[in-house]
Image (cartoon, rainbow, N blue to C red; front, side, top):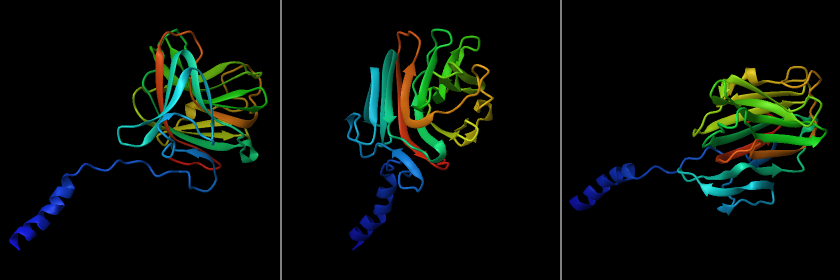
Length: 251
């Protein structure tokens, strides 16, 4: 009897000593008003493929791997000025307006050549503008890279509205949210739930030519990495919890 009692008393101590279970944020995929969602938990490990999305690569790869805490994440790897994107195709948002959310970690950002420009999220469709709600640029006068909203291909030209108030942080997970508001062709950003008003662009307030910035009719959203200038490096980006919705998802 004493032996049995001592075993029972030891059980809570054994349970407390066991390693903690892997923690993963609750999935957004079951929420209402979600237009697209991928948390990679049901995607097989290895080369990233799915019937839900396409792949766009050149000198780059996409693979699904296990993160240290056990959840599956998308690894984006590129060589030189390559690209590797997950493509959300046949996308449609009511009123051409939507919110997005992604968790991401970049191992490093380019430091050459001067003014090297990169994109992590890109939205395109029926219309000339290529809208980049999340990208950035290496600024040699500051000696580091900064986040910025940008565009290309339309009358406003090729621009990145980077701000020193939003440094691109290396080797740390961040939750990035953004809003596309067609009423004023407005792009807004949040990092870890904190608004970044310095990065906001709109029809008349942007970083390009002095003409109106106008959204295309969005039908494709891409997540990944592209560096546009010649470069002899390699870049790794990690993505998780990608969500597009008609209302803000939150972190």
